[in-house]
Image 1 (spheres, helix red, strand yellow):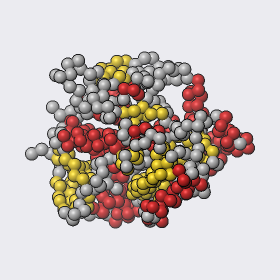
Image 2 (cartoon, one colour):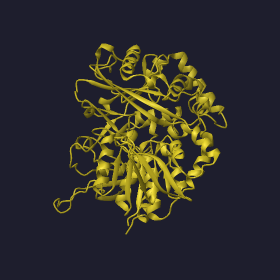
Image 3 (tube, helix red, strand yellow):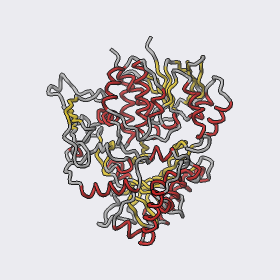
Image 4 (tube, one colour):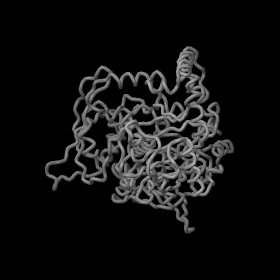
Length: 565
């Protein structure tokens, strides 16, 4: 009888684990998804022909393994790839369509034909230029676009570069007095660092100076988290913006200004993630890729059960043996297996488990906090603010720093992919709010919430209310695992869950770790690596974080060792 892996959640981590099992082992994945949508936080919401990306997902990773995984499934669109040289981890990746197509079809998702060659010598900045040529897409819709990333801060009813750069516009917007204060404050912070760094406030002041922290970081961060920065663990900064500081931003500006490289590098492995200027993006939004992965999982014999919420986890000793799940019709089913992957929030996991839970562990679990998320999509005729040439703003994201509104961030979906918008003459934007599910904002009826959002974005001069033609509200509970509450005691909870030898926590909520989707995927890949190779190391899962370097040679060796004959 074939081994079975019960996977809770059909988001990036869960679906990555499912497809990896099918590609590399005889383990049959059984995916249980509580909702009726594929993709988790990386799903694409459809509304009257328009598509919404919940939170915005740039397909960029410093992991070559993840980048290759994405491109194996969705090649770069021919129109995009012809305009760029694609660099990848210092090695050439030549992906060719076989000459005898009838006999040697390219198996989408099975991996391209790859030939490796040494990269050119590093340039003056230490970057190795290399080339990846992609197989011609077999489906014109199932492709990645190469998109320019432009994000700005909106503050004082003006636009500032994000991250802050020393441009004439920035200095003019700040004013001479504030600019001098920023410089002096930064020098002071570098000369006298806060040690030890205990909070996010300490982390940010050490890297940007007190003045810049109060100007651009404090209000927005507290708007996102609903908690003073002094009460948020510095680990949030270490995961999300490690490697970035005012000095890094200045160096990047100088490099960008004076570099004479002719070719664009999509991989950008030497660049901090907050400075990435190009990224891959599925033509029809992030959910398109995960819906394709789900199709491959089913096609290869895996199972995906939609609308089944796991509410009980049964254990025998140090092993999980089965889970119970229910649906909206009141039906219940038991799913037994050999391995169990959980992407469900850790608080819910502990509540569901039937093994004895120490009181202190339960206390930690119940004290974990989450930030919830609302996107209000607005279809408008035009925006009031425009580029200098009169055209649509080129931003993908705009960070709203204005303290007189609750609005935290604004997406312009047209700029993620023009194919997200049904009518190219309209502007499709997403207004993003951060809250708790106990807040009045969360409980506000959809129509009232749309009116509230329109009033806010009109108040700060982004658009005129009369130009709004339609709207849609999307709520996402537990979108952001928080680094406060009982998080300081998280190791107690981790130690408890790690004792179950066949239970693997992966993904953002599964690990209560504010990861991007690529790192959620890597946790799943690493867990499957261990199972297939017979060398399970749960510590390796927890070591994966947003800026860990993943060396291609080590990955290749592990993948080879984990291959089942």
